[in-house]
Length: 60
Image 1 (cartoon, one colour):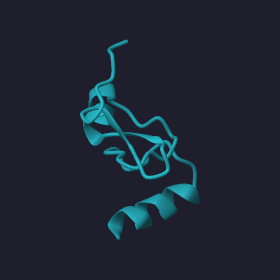
Image 2 (cartoon, one colour; image 1 turned 90 degrees about the vertical axis):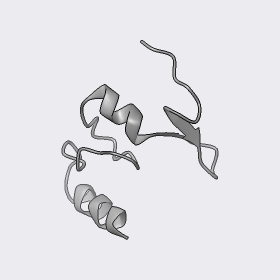
Image 3 (cartoon, one colour; image 1 turned 45 degrees about the horizontal axis):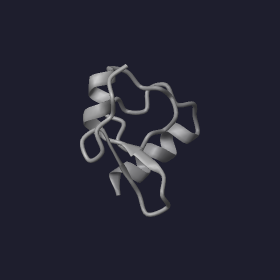
Image 4 (cartoon, one colour; image 1 turned 30 degrees about the horizontal axis):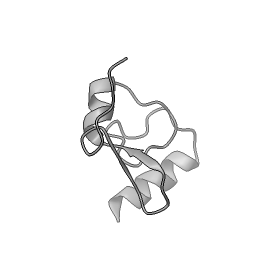
């Protein structure tokens, strides 16, 4: 497993949580189903109704 680079693969948000970047997700190559903020795969593995809610939030 490759080492994650802060500011490239992830950053920390205001609540102190680690947020994975779109770059990281694209390199991984698939949606993990956790509803990640920068998911470039349209939340394809997230169950409804959460998937629809995340897509709506992303549009705002």
